[in-house]
Image (cartoon, rainbow, N blue to C red; front, side, top):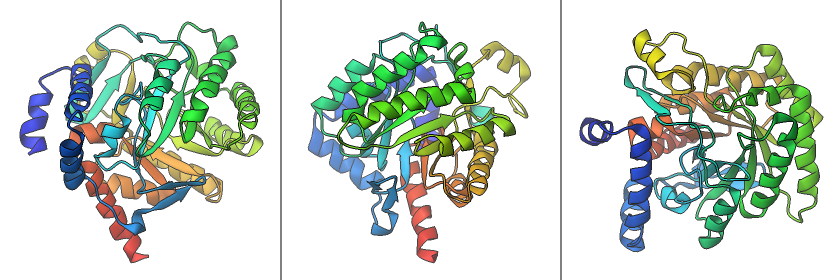
Length: 348
């Protein structure tokens, strides 16, 4: 029903309009909390003790989460948990609110089952998100994805990451350093090994000032060279970073089925969805094998089918995150993935 009726209707609207509409519907719908939560939980949640997953000291009800980018401002994390996610990653959050890049900035390429976006860290700022988190006790594990404001020069970026980290740390379960988004001008310069280590070391000092330890993960780009990927692995061993999220969106446009003139008209931005599936899985496998399975990994990028999720877990990921696959497959997608993971685990 979703693919044949609901999705075609939704896809008549622009992607960002649909996103805003869904957030509004969730906010309004849950004004009748018992009715809405009961219905959604019945249809979309799937629970089994074998799905429980321990990762970096945290207990996840299942291994499937929602990637950063959907609930940027921590407005609907509890509502989204009723769709079967065991964790929601909010953000990317910056110290100050910012509008992001000019619209239009989000585009579907249905022929390739993909999305191209150049949102540009649009968000209401970390203070707004903290206020939202204080309003409602999270029903799922919440991760906080942090970045720098676009107007902040790279040489001052440590201050932005430090401020966002310190404000968000008490209110989330884990934090993610986002240096790999392709939609912020010159952000990729911060992926240089030494610059990344400088930022991480400051955040490690910040973490030590808090009474409770929480994991810090680094989100990496799928556009890294093998040498750069090796650097990311070495960063794990040279710092107190606790894990890696692989991967962010890609600037590559290789082997797309969509007409070139359409791709050219869209312009720059990060590509997600099916075109990213193979590359992101390769990165997960490389990191896992190169580290002898020592590095904790959350896999994201191109999980468009149940099989994609299983493949990423087999490649070495402990948890998976979806976003574009959730949009293309609908709210039942998480339940289907969890059923498949349970089937795999019952074989063990």
